[in-house]
Image (cartoon, rainbow, N blue to C red; front, top):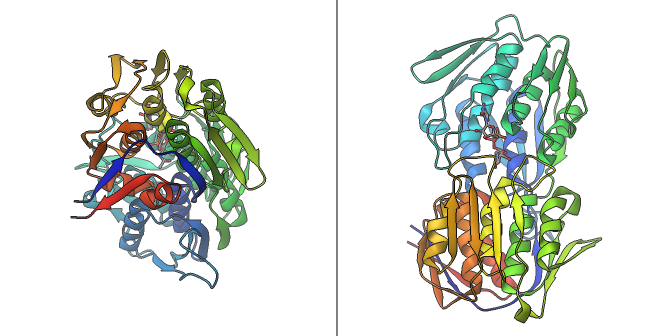
Length: 431
Ligand code: UD1
């Protein structure tokens, strides 16, 4: 099992190219199931989760061709996928695959919308608390599908097609909104989604669906209106930049000190997080190439902050662990409240091993800044938690070994190379 070795104490200086967003790529790939034609996706990141979804779609009979690099391109350019679901051979998504990645449950929507039937395993437990799918099922049922739960599988049937409806989400859900939007695109009549997720990835998927011939308006706002169409066509779409990767490297730079250009990053995708960084004393400068993050004069340290995670446009839960790592060395006491997922504090124990002082009280963490962290062996527990350990290690004295880095590979492309090029002492130890 690969590990990552980091020796802390070096500044970061240079350029980090930001990849396409994982959380847009996955639903975009799933949207290919809605059409017999080829969907071409550009700027797709090279991630374990993308490779896993390729396998899952392959199981339904989807052909995926990955374009080789064109002349002049480097690994910094995303890959291009040509995805063709011309013939769906199987409408079942089995437990062995769905249990490895929750987002694969979302295939339920396009399969039932196009094929009139889908059988998708319940995703099962997850390292970050109970993550139910009741609202996703509710949305499909609202659109007229009959739902049954049979031996751990959700079976959705709509032999005569789905019909438009009003879907009111009692809670903001990204997966629920993607699911409802995809299914409603092929439903008869009009669908109105109320209390929709406003995450930029939802708007990106709606853009792509519209290029495929869907009629979606309002994506990115609380109300999305979809006029169903009889069929969708192929299209070409470039995935938007990853705001979580952007925020992660911004916090890494803030932690290590230095001056880094986050190339291709778009500030409007993570304004709340950038505002928090400014409050800590970091210099954030949008440029026409991306976002520049600088922190010099390390001596005075970062200011502590009080932050609560919430749906977009507020501070994202997917940057909570990284911010906590940063605040372990603030000059004073910070508070971080997690309102999206329960149990999303598994990084706390590991950060403590590096010398952090963190107290947990339900969904609220109190972080007392310490002058220095000390390297130690630590364990990656989930995707965002593991990258928070890397951030802490960049500023810890001595060597940190991060074990179980397969979690990192799910969502961060060539992390050690991107940080190494900016001067971090970081290497992957294989085996
Ligand atoms: C997506 C993101 C994930 C991010 C999360 C919140 C992807 C692939 N994943 O996950 O990185 O952390 O949004 O921004 O895009 N809920 C229910 N019932 C449901 C569905 C959700 O109660 O049927 C609850 C969840 O438990 C959670 C909240 O709604 O408390 C938000 O979850 P949701 O937005 O659905 O997260 P995901 O789409 O799974």
